[in-house]
Image 1 (cartoon, rainbow over the protein chains, first blue to last red):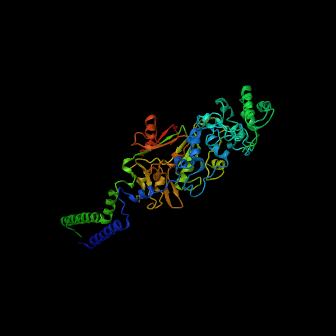
Image 2 (cartoon, rainbow over the protein chains, first blue to last red):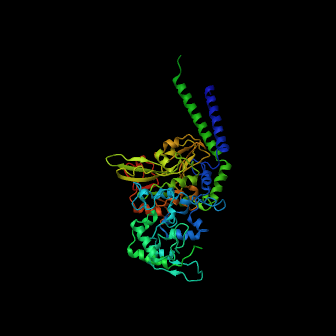
Image 3 (tube, rainbow over the protein chains, first blue to last red):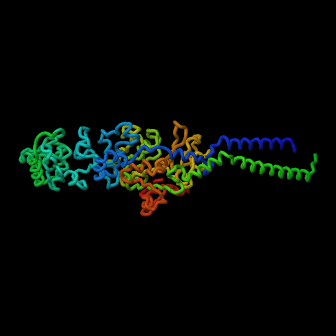
Length: 255
Length: 280
């Protein structure tokens, strides 16, 4: 055999030996297990730990919130959308409560071309409440069930108003109409009409005064961004009924 | 100098014969040797474990698919945020596994204006590169048509990225997800260029390619991908084509569905509803 041919064969043989060594000792044993890739890579990727745990995980401790949330229109917005991924919570501390709710809520609810009509949207500058930073969305809206006055089961949610002065007394039963009428009032004034931290206390005040004030807010004679907005659609009868309702509640500071 | 042509010919023939035999022998011997004991043990071990890749999950039983209903998308970008948190994607505006495009047709214009969260005006509106929102630049414009389109890896049945990978670092699993083996990826970025959908990005920290894998670590545990989990309006639908009760089958059966760039032959398994001719 000519010398140049045997050299070539020698080279070929050396290459084959190297290839066999590489295949057996350098290549991962799981390579070619299923195809031209490392089978163990699939196992490694599948072993990653999920960061988002899902609403059922939250429900284990926050059952009350979960119930409230599933009854409201925000039920399609899972806990972790606003509070962030649960990760190792509760072991590594509490999850954030969003502070700048104007910024957060408008991510979905700012009126914008391209958003489907079914999505509730607000023109920020025209929304009943002036968004100057002093009033957060949560002042009027409950984030877990944000629709004011029209939640599916308002009777169950707020019908029983317990007068705090008499723990043993039976809850005051109010009509369904009154439940709907008072829904916008409750976030600030409280179900018992006594919450004076955010607003004026209403419980036990004179009927005529409440009636007159409501009419003045409605007409704009009295100026208040929230009150003007929530009284705009009230009829005279609504105002009279609301005044009577709050006048009939027992007064005194919130306990 | 004259040479004997017949002798020359027989010499070449003899050489080819010998060389051919030697080559065949060497390849055969090499192949036999390659089936080393270690490899056989590994494969036998995997087969004995019954299900792969985890004890509770057998990838031969599933066929994943993804639906995107663009008529529902509100462009809130919670999917982008969740994807990054779930998968440890860099929290800046320019590295992402999923994104949302806004298409806006203005009165008198033929072509749509397209932007996404990485547009400078949108970064300015969100306040930082690690927060994501669309600005409201078209609120006073005469908009004739506008919509949002979520995008991500299409998990193609004939993926171009897999075809071009020189080291077998990217591949399609039995259950229909294209994965990246981060330890084998050499960072050549051929796949980033090969993807017709721009779904891959290069991770400068790890020096490897990265992309959406439908949260493979979640779906193999019975969870939804993070983007589907957080979508507040049900614009993202995910499920198993092998499971008749899966929402993905309802989505595919009850809608006229499209895929992006069907002409490439990539055969995506992301199915779209409500996209326009300019979306590709």
